[in-house]
Structure formats: structure tokens, C-alpha cells
Length: 374
Image (cartoon, rainbow, N blue to C red; front, side, top):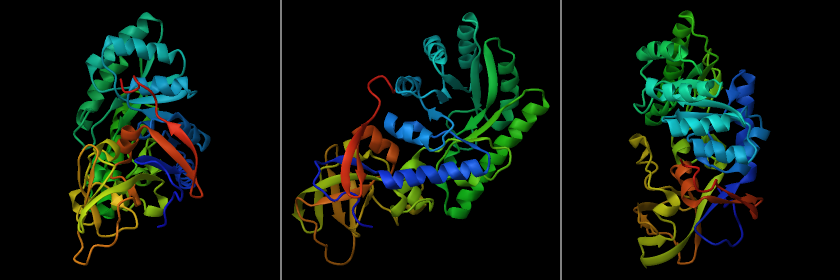
């Protein structure tokens, strides 16, 4: 694939190609709308109000975020419907949530009686009810109650004054360990079917649930086809990254993001250094080890097969030649484009994106400011 920016630019820099981005936004919005499922993009991927506004303009029903600080930042920028898909715990967070709920349509995440009780108490004291969704673990082993335990906890939450239980949500991140596309499909459908089954048990017990929400870019297309799913919350789909390419749900042509870097050292024919290290690329390898032979290193160096970013220091990307052939030219001063392994950490590391159209820089987008990660 040809370079997405064709003019000089200071490096390291995060670049987003607007045409590819908007095509990705339209595709996912159209897929969700065709199945009657709401699209709530996970804006923690980029944390950029300008990009979030584009997602809303292209049919998103609201924004998903990870932290209250993100929700406050996006609210300040004009967003009016948000889901905090993360356990909100403690009276201090509950008071902030109450203040935010007076400004926007807000739904909060919980997975414990302790967290929910604090929310209920603060909202009840103000004569309000907190809209909450219960997190369910569908295999990742992170936050969320086990499916078998969800109905009992839901019954206790439904009895709390100051609380309205409106749905279930999960991050079916175990999909990223899939060995191949068929395994990805199987994992995605299993997670969605488990969530729908849990919701049906709760409804049968008299707990009205409005939403069954799934959240993972790799599995979003698969779970859309499972009857009973009402929401999807993909994040990386907007720009894609090497992880999505490896799993077969994206290509270089549908990946809108690049970290542009400069070769700053070629001390030997088979090695060199870039000016993009962990502070620009993050430090993630592919989650699924099955793909690391095909996509080794810390990102894909576009248009330079054989060259791999083998290691990262804070400010250095360690280039190594991995082919049996003679190393191809990559002289000091040459600019290269890297598809990062994980888009979220590249956005978090660099915090500003240069927007590109037809190979030219046309503007910049900034991330939310300090406090948004709280």
C-alpha cells in the first residue's frame, strides 16, 4: 500500500487518514442499523472529541467510555449520551456521576453490590435514580460477574432505591486469543449467546432488562447476528490496527492509522533505529501468539517487508532485518509509516493526531486533557 501522507512532517507523529476513517464509520453504522442494533463506539480508543463527533454524525447512538473523567471531557465537548462501561466504585465517583447525570443521559457500569450501593445511596439522597448496567465476564477473566452469578446479583441491585438496572454488558476480549477466523466467530457467538441467555433468565425472574451489550471490535460483526443483542461497543474498528489485520477483520487498506517515524541510525546493514519507541508505539505485542510469526514485532513497517521493529526503548524503535536475503535500503533520514499493534496505546502515547486527506495534512485533533483518565 502507498503512503497515506506524502509531504514532510515532523516525527514521531500519529496520522489518521480521514477517508479511510469515515469509510470504517459508515460500514459499522450501516451493519448495526441493518440489524436494529445500537452502535455505541468505545471512545477510549482515541479519546478525541473531534473523532467522537464524527462517530455520532455517522449514526452512533451514543459513546461508550472507560472512566468518568472521559465522560466528563466528552460532555464538555458536547456529547449527550454516554455509557461508562467500567465499575464505578466509591462515594466520590458516585457524586461525580450524579453531577454528570444532571447534564447528560448517563448509564453507569457496576459488577458488585458494594459499588452499586454507593451509587444508589448518592442518587437516592438527591431524589434521582442511577441507570446502571451489570458487567458480566464471558471468558476474559477481567471484571464482571460470572454468568451463573449474574441473576442473583441483579435481583439485589434491582431492589436498591436510587438504582435502575437497565441491562447487561461484557467485553468479549477473549476473542483476541482466537486461533483463526472460524475460532473468532465461535468465541464471539458463544459470548453473545451466553449474554442473551443470562438476560432471558433475569427477565423470566421479573427483572426487566432493556439492553444486552457486547463490546469488542474483532467480534462486532459476528455478534450483530445473534438475536437478542441490542448494543455493540467496538472501539478500534474506527481506525483498525495490526491486531485487527492479524485476526482477518481489517486490511492495510482499511487501517486509517499510522505512526510516522524517521530512521535515525543505521549502524550496520542489518539493523537501525527509528525515532519512535514505546512512548509513541506503546509496548504491546499481538495478543494472539498464533499470529506473531506472521506479524512479528511492535507494529508493521508499511512497504518494507523484512524489516521488523524487534524491540523498543522509550525513544528508540529497534529495527532488525529478518529476511535471508540482503537487507533492502532504509537510509538514515528516511521516513516510514508504522501500523501500530494496538491503536489505543498509540493514541494514548501521542495524544494528538494529524488528519490527512489525499496525502496532505489538513489539521490536527487533540485528546482529552488531564483528569480524563480518572
